Image (cartoon, rainbow, N blue to C red):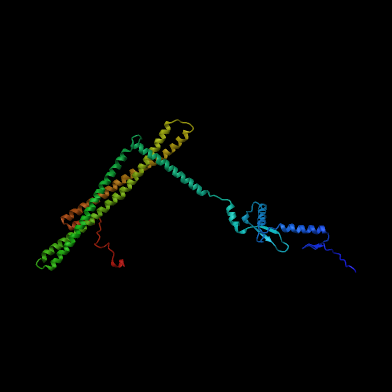
Amino acid sequence: MSENTDDTTPNDATLPGSEEVVSDPEELEMAQDFSRSTAAEIPVTSNGDMDDTSEHSFNLELKRSVPGGLGLSETRITHGFDDGKEGIFEATPYQGDRQSAQQRSGPVVLSEEPRSTAVEKFELVRRWSLNTYKCTRQIISERLGRGSRTVDLELESQIEILRDNKKKYEHILKLAQTLSSQLYQMVQTQRQLGDAFADLSLKSLELHEEFGYNADTQKLLAKNGETLLGAMNFFIASVNTLVNKTIEDTLITVKQYETARIEYDAYRTDLEELNLGPRDAITLPKIEQSQQLFQSHKEKYDKMRSDVSIKLKFLEENKVKVLHNQLVLFHNAIAAYFAGNQKQLEQTLKQFHVKLKTPGADAPSWLEEQ
């Protein structure tokens, strides 16, 4: 009985994925141990899935190896499992957040214009506060009788006369307006009374002439009253312009002059106090600056005083001319009306170029109302 023998023995084994045959028992045992250790390194969870903690550890290692200029949010990790690329990882910048990252990390350039504007505003507020403080202190010291005050006696007397005259002219204006309103009511009553007399004159034959005379008289009085009313309204308008525009404009200039006077006295007092103190390296620049401010406010005060003097002079000339004409008109119109001289009343209005408004001239026509 013959036995067939082969070149291979039962102890020979072939490793998967390898083309070499291991014939040595010791090598076979080492290969099997290597396979078991490699499989043991793959973590498996309780349900049979692969654990991703190894991938997480790898990401942490990759984050440490990425250059400092790239953030983790800017890096995209690609796991390649194609042929010939297994286990290759590519780290490329993330394009979606590149622009926002540049905006966050880019340099910020501040414009100098807003800063300069803010500095200018702060300087204006500082000067205004300092000037207000000085003027308030000057006013309080004057009222308490402690501070000195610059007074132009002639100019101050003219200003007081102007203010007193303004009050008197306002009183005359108010009375003239009241008289004009009462005259208007009387004219309306006379016109209605004349219409009533005329109606009765047509319906009462036995008193036709008597009602007719009274109707004509009331209508004539109403017509003359409208003429006088026109003259009075012209007088009121002229005096109102003189009081509330011309005189008021002059008084505004007077207020500006008084403000300039207070500022002048305030900076004058500061300069006097500095001159009374010691003169050293610290106080000399302050004295020089105070001298400049005092000089500028002195020039402003002199200019405002000159402006007030000129305006007061022109106002006096204008006031005399306007009031002369208006007072003559008012007198002649009143005298002619109560004397019943219709021709003289109409002549007075022509002399002063007073135009009467026809009744209902201000009311819009029915065509304009559409």
